[in-house]
Amino acid sequence: MTLRNLLESRLAQALQKAGAPADAPPMLGLATRPEFGDYQGNGVMGAAKRMGLKPRQLAEQVVAALDLGDIAEKVEIAGPGFINITLKNEWLAAHLGQVLADERLGLAPAASPQTVVVDYSHPNLAKEMHVGHLRSTIIGDALVRILEFLGHRVIRHNHVGDWGTQFGMLIAYLDHLEREGQDLSGELADLEAFYRAAKQRFDEDEAFARLAREYVVRLQGGDAHCRQVWQRFIDESLHHCEQVYARLGVTLKREDVRPESAYNDDLAHVVEDLDKAGLLRESQGAQCVFLEEFKDHEGEIAPVIIQKSDGGYLYATTDLAAVRYRAGELKADRILYIVDARQDLHLRQVFAVARAAGFAPASCSLEHHPFGTMMGKDGKPFRTRQGGTVKLLELLDEAEVRALALVSEKNPELPEAERRHIAQVAGIGSVKYADLSLNRTTDYIFDWDRMLALDGNTAPYLQYSYTRVQSIFRKSGIESLGTQPGLHLTEVAERNLALRLAQFAETVESVARECYPNILCAYLYNLAEIFMRFYESCPVLKAEEPTRSSRLLLCQGTARTIRTGLGLLGIETIERM
Ligand code: ARG
Image (cartoon, rainbow, N blue to C red; front, top):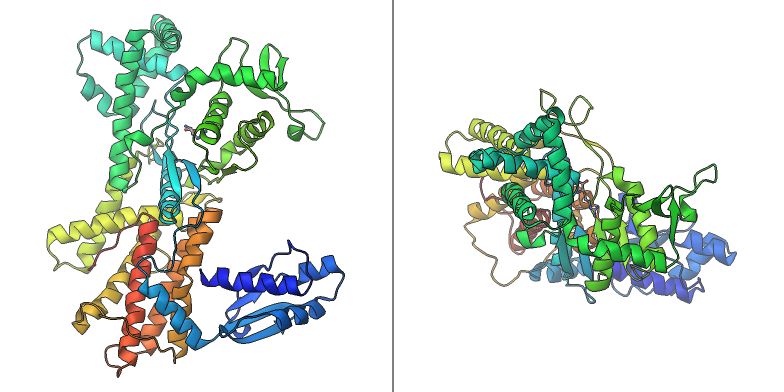
């Protein structure tokens, strides 16, 4: 059990004994200041209000009922009714000893694993992957790693856009090139250029535009030739995505692709079932769902369009089929959508219609975890100097080139192959960490200098901190600590480090719950800083036994925690930098 869960459950019991309502939350948080102890319970005020008691009075009853055994040194009531808890050093040392003896650093696999579908990355295959897909890919991949580590059954869904009118134009163009005997693999090597060429032709050549429209209809009708050309295009586009995934170290595989087209055959049934559920209404020839909750301030309900007047389906129709498949067939307990904040209304509509139609039972949690736009330093959406979209592979090349320059400047004596490896790990790590470390809901400014800096909340800083801790071991000549030594927390800096190390498990659990990877980043950064303070004030190798071994164990615990934490974020570590 994590430290937090342990204290929380004891506090909850005490609240009950003091007569609080059964659902009154203990609201345990980290103490906001060192003089308040280690943790702080904030639930008394809310409970007292519901009970019609003075908060101080309830706080006293809760503290009297609070059984922390030998866990706490001190329990104090502060302010209107906060309960401040200070852990006992010996208990903390023993608890951390157990955590560090555990390969998983105290993160027990979930007692009741859930089935979690994570919808992320999902590029539109008509075009090459660009920076717009970076955030979903990076954030989603960190979340699947964390959920999987916690023992959940994770199903990755790369809901790629592979259907729609654009594909008529693209395959008509591909077909045309093939008839002309062009080298297709060369033409498709740059999908962006291919798209532009097809679009230009579409805009300029009336006959071609007509053909393209005809191809859409034939494709949708299952015409074998159109299907085959389309499949070739899709395969090529997915191959591009896979190159990006490989470079980024993202865990998505071909079998995780669950494209929009996979739901084609189900769309008519979605419409039928919505109709049976009495939810459909015709409006201007289109089939729509009107739900009270989408009433605007004038009392008008904005409709969710399910089928157009020409019989065509919409983005929302596909998403409804997807919810039904995930909740119904896959029996998902949670479905996470790592999708751009601009699709907020779309997803709220999809969720609401899915609930109304019974496509997802109440037990299945539908969660949109939005993120903001990636901006350039000029505060405008991130683009190339020429104003074009930034291609991901080029961006990753630049990350490595810049990191290599920095490494070569700092460590010119390292062999080139090693410098290149460091540049790759630090360069890719920087791009990922810069995104993960910020609260995802805000827009984020892409800034090379900041993300590659060796100080501050960056990947290189953490990777470097890791190498510093590891170098202590190299200097000690100790390979491993053998049987685990006891921990002795006498100095404040030792205690601070021990407490922070013991909080790794609860931090990861909270990220799995709330889906904010920046919380884990902030934790790791803070841990690295606390470690530096410890290392400045507490000699390790020069200390006498048993202090020396105890401090070495703290060092080793720090290194393992940073490596494991970065690993859960999809970021690698190296032994020398
Ligand atoms: N392919 C879509 C886009 O590029 C994103 C898909 C998000 N997932 C979903 N289930 N709608 O905008």
